Length: 97
Image 1 (cartoon, one colour):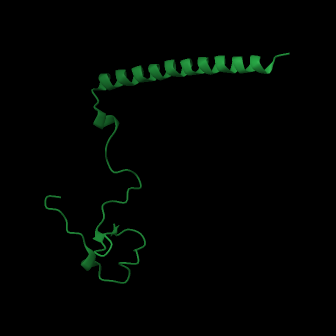
Image 2: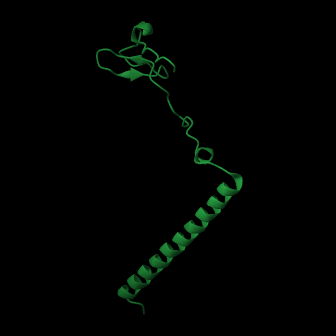
Image 3: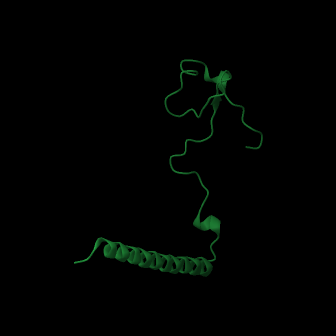
């Protein structure tokens, strides 16, 4: 019959083996990725584009002068702009943007 301490020792040994196998597998994946990047002449921008994230709400278009709160103009309007002339709350666009 296996004792509790024996089982704990086996568990520790298995966890060590798992960690080593994961590290080796990760290293293989990195080597493959680097080889493909070099083969195709890719850059970080090619692999990890910095475009708009899915679900991004965008830049704010309106600002409440009293509190500084902003709103993008999408979704339900906040109470500070609801039923009011939105032109009063427009944030001026920066030149060259």
